[in-house]
Length: 274
Image: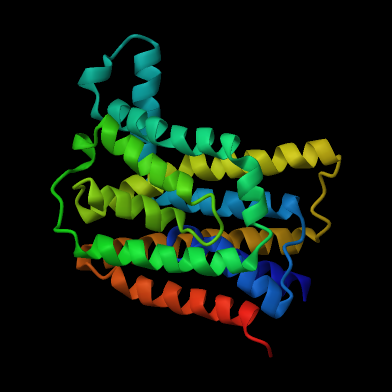
């Protein structure tokens, strides 16, 4: 039973990490309705690991090229302006800054927001509205080689909003990319590449909390941990592939309807007497 629970949580984590539907909103819903409580921060780190691997598998060529270019730049073998891969790495770094700064500055506010299921419901409605507007924007023309500093800052600021539960990180970053005239596939690619430092950062924060608390065990059987991690990896791969296909077809509004329905469900569940 514990292994089944771990697999279900892994699937939820993998799908909702990349589809623009908010992982926090779904975890809140499944935990409260089905009693699928996350078995500790240690297990959360393994779920993050699974989704991280899925991104690295899909974009291994890009990630490898950026890593090699960074190494060549450090050794003085290549100039920044002469390396598109190095420039892309720099844009991802710039885009990561706003979430770090805003997250630290407004940490008490965000912690309070996570205590309210009602907040999740309203933030899901906001996510749906932004996705709806993004779909109405004319198709952009910028490729990854043309993503600039201002683009990265705007996309990164939208990512910072996703610290709030119910706000989809992928939904915000993809929408921001579309608003900045990136073509839809590039917006998706940049969003997924941005998820690498975001996922690593989330796992690192969980690890810090674990070290401070002095508890490093998941409290779960190894089979359950491995099964949950693999479930997050496989569902993450599926989510990335399906979302890229949807972006090419221009069908983001389907997700708007879904998160609106989920948001209304959560709000009604909390406000209406049963």
